[in-house]
Image (cartoon, rainbow, N blue to C red; front, side):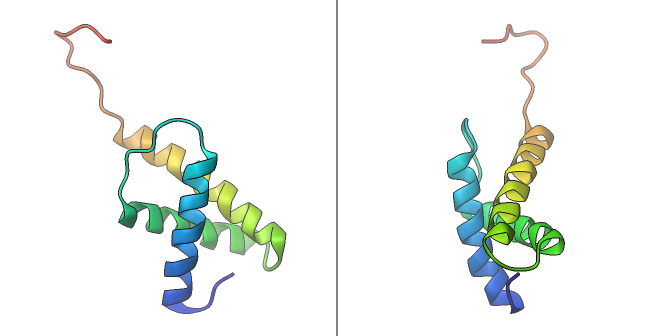
Length: 85
């Protein structure tokens, strides 16, 4: 989908930001993680759809799924002795 390291870096930033905007709910992650998730989404989307508008859609949808997985992995659970809010 993109060419070279810097292509995936810039494209990953764009796709990561778009995915965070389209996914509902809070996304407490930094810029570097946004770029990495966007680049991962671009790689996955580019694998299935090579070029064109559908490649961007597939990349953004893949990045949204990666954000959900990242949130599930890094979710903090409250301590057992304190009630949940």
